[in-house]
Picture (cartoon, rainbow, N blue to C red):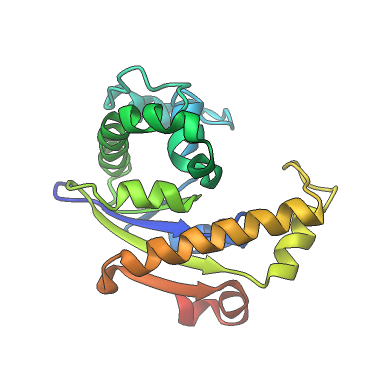
Length: 212
């Protein structure tokens, strides 16, 4: 379908339930849950899971997007991670990457919508600084869903040893949460009122139909 794709960006801390929320939304008509699209550049457009339909889908997406040398670039370090604001030495590179990064990401959203035949895309990339950059895209309708979870649940999740993701101690996780929530709140409040929504993970688990 033509037209401007609508992107619902799930923002907030990791381990806050974005995957189950994204899968739920992806089961709605006309909605594609694309996962964490911030990883598309870092992985050179190749999905982590290698089943044939998935590979073919992302191959078609990659054919439609000119990454302009940004594959395996430092976009995540310089533009997306919350800690980027603390690395002053990276600020010149941050400024240089900003314009091509926005162009490629907008083209990515449009390509995903075209290949999937869906005008509504859920991107669960989390990062508030990524959302800050993508608020300025002119070729998509950008919505923010700020997902929050009880901090104790997030800290406990980061400390688990039975999952594939990295583990973090209590001090590191709390510092990460403080910075992430501070930036997420600032980005959320500056976004258009009619294109932002705050959702508690606990409310979604208790009554998913109402939240959806």
